[in-house]
Amino acid sequence: MNISIIHKKFPYTFKNMTLILIGINIVVFFISSTNSNMVYYGSMIPILVMREHYYWQLLTYMFFHSSISHLFFNMLGLFFFGSQVEKRIGSWEFLLFYLLTGLLAGVFSYAVYIWSGNYMVILMGASGAVFAVLLAFAVFFPFARIFVFGFIPIQAPVLVVIYTAIEIFSQLSGVNSNVAHLTHLAGFGFAYLYILIRMGINPIDVWKRTRR
Image 1 (spheres, rainbow, N blue to C red):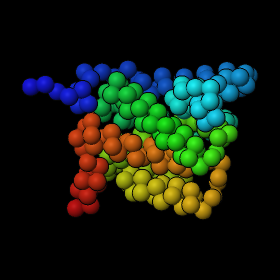
Image 2: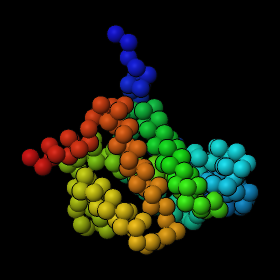
Image 3: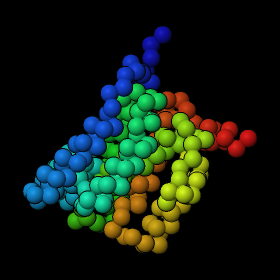
Image 4: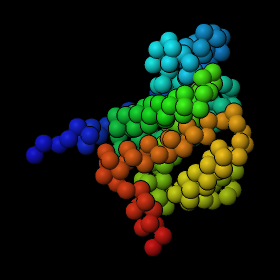
């Protein structure tokens, strides 16, 4: 029986891809902090993608960060959630998941920026892909509890719902307008579709079972 390429699985292997991705982000940050041209070419700037055909920016934006705190919190989330998801699905599947959801979140954001006329915005950061990883974590470990602020326990699926509500509210109200809320939501959305289509798992069904 032929297996569609969409559903074809990678042989399971664990290579600490999460740490490799974190290392790449750190190296890129420190190199780009001393070379502004790297930020110009690596971040996603809609006008450059559209007029200069810098299509690689739709992917590379996720490896650039605006500040050390921006880098730190994204990498912290990637470390805690990504390492567990990678162990569950394997390194190559995780790498495909991470890069594809980040790419699609970038493409979605680009389309929205072009449609809304925000040609000169600069999009950078791994947040879209990290949000995707958080959703995957909530699917594979639905009973896990995350201690927000270090002492408030919240079940992983509930945290996804809370973050979704916060991002929607922030986008509609204009709160933290310098934050790419739509990119975060796109990360959730494309992660949901990836898990549903490629893995044949419906996240909603998984979360419903946790409430029984």
